Image (cartoon, rainbow, N blue to C red; front, side):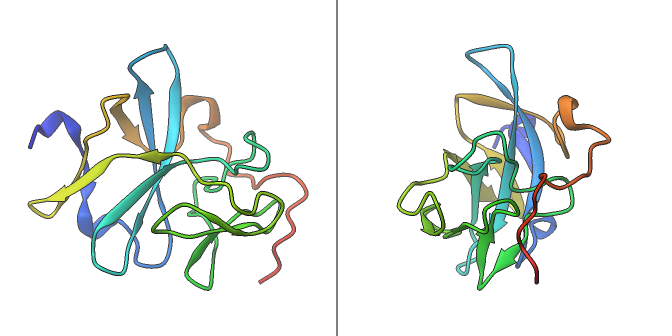
Length: 142
């Protein structure tokens, strides 16, 4: 695999959480955040880091997206998303899907294979650097 497309060691992706990365769009001069999550079979799925109800709400604010019953949860709306398919299974955007980012696990590492992006860095996009706050109006109370 191309080392420039290497995102992280596969072991860095949590079993019950998310890993936040920043990607650069190849079509436009824009950074996009994505979250990586480990699936039950050991593979890794990647999704753009925003809720389908309000796309300005980030799922992972830098400390891992909350999980509920093994699903990714939105702090603002309490919507839940299936980690494997990205489908919203509960909440105001039920039936909608997270936008996927193609990744592959090979040689114990996660590689970006989506031609729409290049890997930029681990962690939040430049616009969110230093902003570890959660979305206003958080409704999750675990």
